[in-house]
Image 1: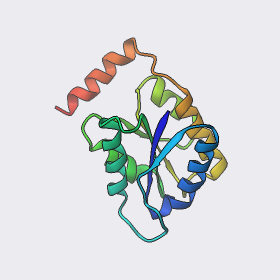
Image 2: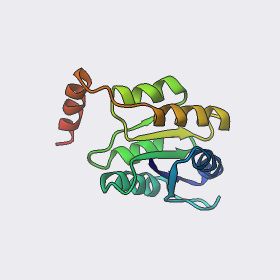
Image 3: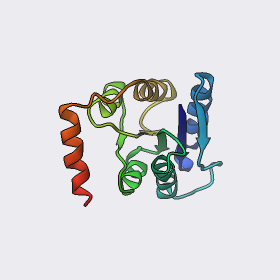
Length: 145
């Protein structure tokens, strides 16, 4: 699976660690930045990963900022994207099973490295259940229109 990753400066160090973790598990990772600790704006990276999913350049996305909130909101502004900020593995699992989320966001200032790895692993290991959940997703996506 090909994973797109993006972060702002607050999430940069955690992004590097998660990227290494995912590559060690055999995932191909495309890093959309940032590439340093210099101050940047998280919307740029949320948008980049969201667009990469829509163009099928990558299959799933992992975003990191200080809380995960700003970068997930930014990704969700891209029509057709469902990004969820999660601080524990159960929500990450259910964001895929029930909401068919394409992007997980985590907060580098909220969760530590080990917990972030568990969250991302859970997110990437799950599959959408479909069924009654598809009807709900269709309703969510209708809101964008």
